[in-house]
Length: 566
Image 1: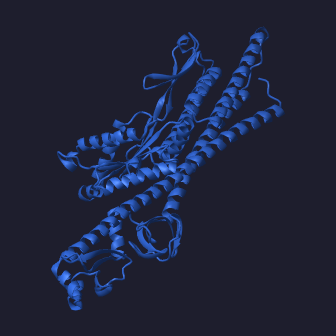
Image 2 (image 1 turned 180 degrees about the horizontal axis):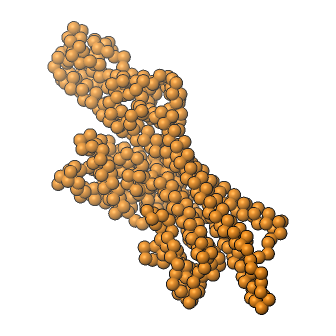
Image 3 (image 1 turned 180 degrees about the vertical axis):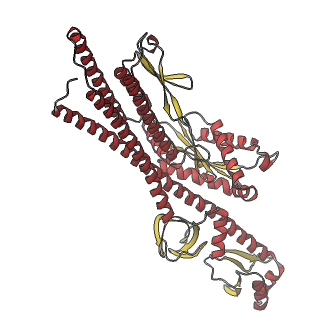
């Protein structure tokens, strides 16, 4: 067999190395992108956790204020309090205050007894029978560690996280020791003492700089992000190593074929020997072309619809097959050439035994068969196809995980934000309406406290099923986090959003989970509905629906409120 000139050998070696380097670079780039997506998802999960803790903590704080007001009203109606205020009896007022911590009695603009220095308090006027004012009962709400721990317990704050109460940036109390001040921004990073935190904060009282903040240590978050990136990189390196090993194996086969000793040609068979040598050179060229095609395909795409035809056509050209196909679960998913015109196929498994992805079927020409070298190349191509399909599967899995809520398999907040912005732009362009429904399960914490988080998770999954069963194919049901959900309704106005919300409330009323509610619905939900173009941007649409949801909560829960109605 004629040997290639050294320059041609070096050129082909350089081309092969270039293709391998390109494939390796592409795989590493894909791994980096996948790692960044997974790291972003980790940050998104933490931010969602913090926002959920804030929302539940704020609701619990509202209950604390309501309890303080009820306590003030109850004291205002009591005879000892009314008599102490009417007579300006400081001794009687002190006895009342001693029995009721954090209570102040005042009359005529003067404090008679009790602690009136609380930053947050509830006041009730005490009236005489003739309508004149006797005085005032003030019940203070101490912003102390006990309150912070109560809010954290209600919010189900995970170990390591914390809820903190602050005024003018200074931390007054927290569910764990947190020295220092919080920044003025509503969310971001903060250095407290020797530790860094991610935080989100919300104002508790309108007109006062009293805030509730949820914090998570930054170190575990960063460690999880590093671990995610490291695992993605190791997977990529393993893939590159496997590709390199396969390329080395094919190269070795080609070198052995070139080094094989050739018998001296016999004169009477010279013509046929020349023909055999030309055929060998043609087979080697087909093999090199197949390797190049597959390398380019691996470097260019993660799409199996683009990869499989290239791999099948390469297999046909390299082995001389009449046709090739890929079969999965008894169904043909790709084909090339004319498999039906060939002989009995060579069947090659794609993937591992534990994770089979189908079989590659190579049909030799009719009444023919593959030689040993063609079969070896077919096995190499099957291995390449397995790598390509596994990379595509991993890429698709990471991408799906980045936009999907793990528990309910609904879209997550990231997917919602992207889709909301896109749908608002589309609605602006075409003049279509767009509705948004926000839903929040009422008193969901009681289910977790009474039955455990496993049962609570089942309730969330069942409510997600209710959403899926009642929306259209092009609507987007979303889990925001915690017990908060949303549905984005393209080409739908405020009336359509209101109808869907009421249909969801009715479906939820029919929901039965025996281990929770027995023969009654285990949970209700409050709904807030808003629409575009009444709300003029994506941010305004979300804010309007959120305000409507809070109004539904304030009006007694288990109801629907629309942004148009107030």
